[in-house]
Image 1 (tube, rainbow, N blue to C red):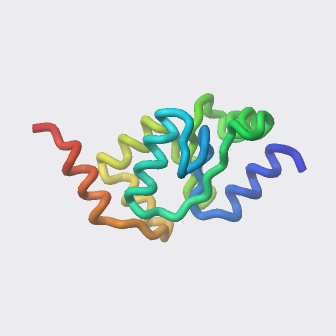
Image 2: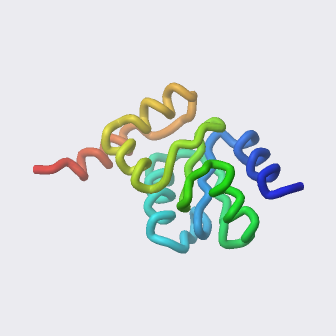
Length: 121
């Protein structure tokens, strides 16, 4: 199975997938840590794929999404974005809307706490 086939299979079989450096329990870069932290805090069940464990997957995910950076978040087969996009969507409430539209369970109160903690005074 090619790296692209493996990626397609992983994205198809999991409602939420984070391609990241490290794992959700032990991220190995700040951007991956940030996105995993948001997902963990919001109580979202997701598959984590450590791109550092496989060079073909690491390059393959960039080719698959036509996106040059890691981490990459997928929800119900749809590429959402990387750290900056996930952060913006979390703070604007767009991530909540996407998760609700796709039928993905998450802790709405935790999501509100993130926004409240990041409001500008």
